[in-house]
Image (cartoon, rainbow, N blue to C red; front, side):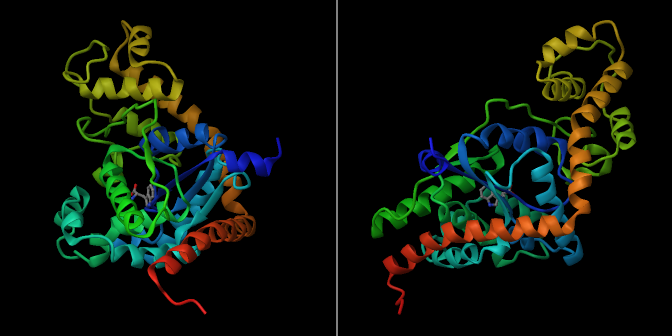
Length: 337
Ligand code: TRP
């Protein structure tokens, strides 16, 4: 079949990650790795959500560096910037433009119910800005611009996808079928990677240096972090998240990178101590990340090539986004000469 014809038969998939630096092993196992499995079956857009990153105080130089780094990481993980569209949100002006329009179709009440807004305004009480509040509207614009059918989301973003569907449905109800209503996609492998310092919490870079493994951590750093990982005072290796969260988390990580099950890994390590479990996990993680890190190092060295990819991919995204935005402007009565 012609490639163009195939493209129209495939459904559209949109996903984005904020360029907040240090993409973790949890991000890789829970998101990036699954994107690679999906990228042949859908028309995919993978976006670096740099505009969303502005909702918290940030360092400009760091944001710039992290954005380019995330683009390189997407590609290093196996996503293809020719088959998919890999780009920065701020390079496509339609995101901000549609976001304004959708703001006028979103209620204060529904935004006030967002748990992430409540969490973040508690954590950053000195900077509860309007962008933090309307964050889900920009996210809805991201998704709706591309007539997205599926959005891979973790649990923390489910509520934002729900509000996106509500906004789209409301708009369509008034103006006819303008937007595709997106569905969430919960990946089959749902290995949840927890913090190494507090295995009852999700692995996150906000929990301190030793609590997470970054995809770009050097092997020695990874070894050190696993050595310090919290376990318990017993000695037997068994998968029991309830009573042995630390040991179970290590088994989950080991299983995730080896595509096995935590129970099988526990079985294989019978009779050995926690030191062996930690070492096995560290080495398996290092082996999994090695090819990604090598590819990343090559890519990040050639900034011109990355810039070229960013330009062509932004153009491709822009062409699709503009079609939706024009339709919206026309429907709502913005006069176009
Ligand atoms: N808010 C998402 C996060 O922090 C990132 C994001 C922005 C996103 N726009 C999106 C995710 C659109 C899915 C679809 O994880």
